[in-house]
Image 1 (cartoon, helix red, strand yellow):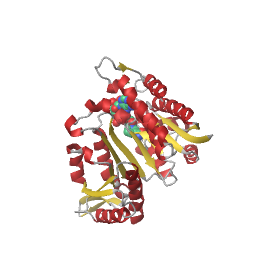
Image 2: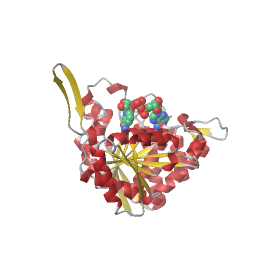
Image 3: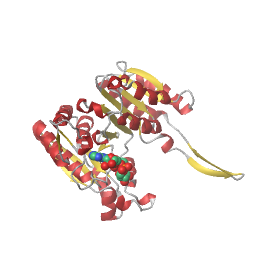
Image 4: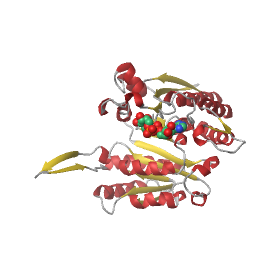
Length: 358
Ligand code: NAD
């Protein structure tokens, strides 16, 4: 029997609650699809600081590197808010991304049919359905470029540098084309090529890679127009590929269209294919320990893991279908509805319901 080793980093706040529900669903899915899962727990964030004094202990890095994939809850909380910047739980997040070489961030923005009314957009703008994948470059660009603060003649100035190399652009472009090939075969590359040299190189390189993917329809869009189009006519998009900073902003904008932070999964991929999967929300310390969090973003992160790292697309689909069915029967507090035929449930009850629908 195939066996997958999954590193499980529950983290802080609601992290342990939501991850427990996601692994419950994964174990049932494994049973149904005839594979085995071995979980290895490891510390990150505040929990790791309390235990070891460090937000990302070496042992956690070793466990993640030895695993087929990594599932992360969330980190951070009031208890560690007064620590100096470099010692905070969130440092563990940046460090694990770096340690695992996670260069591509995949952020789906999906509207689930039963939750259409939760979107801030009008139904006529959303259309039939909405399913966008934002592919963001994660290890290059302005967040990692040369920076500094100078003072000359009494005037202080600061600068950051947007720099991209051809291999960096090629790598993320290939990831995005592969993604588009498996979806609706439409890729929109977003840049600011009317102003920036780095964007002109980005566009030229993406166009060259496009020749290897003739079945994918490639378009280009300036980032300011894309920000507008996402709320004007979001269903024109299938896959969007963009740089680190533009992706940071556009993926948040795209995800808000779906209307609920507790529903959104994400994946960060590396060249080994193992990847790290996590909900986009934080540790929600305001509701931690109450068994009221929405576990669906983490459950959907497990579906992404099955599809993109473990090569089990049918199992992924089963989980996604179970989530849609569950939404028609029950809701956690954050997405509760007045409809009387839909029950209000706790975090673990939602996990049990999805598990029972696998
Ligand atoms: P947050 O995402 O944790 O919470 C924002 C709001 O959304 C809160 O009201 C919270 O209760 C609610 N919420 C979030 N997830 C939910 C869920 N699954 N179900 C129901 N409600 C949910 O963001 P924040 O409050 O800005 O940050 C809290 C902590 O999380 C901070 O320490 C922050 O640094 C950290 N954080 C971590 C990550 C991460 O681990 N990837 C990401 C963002 C923030």
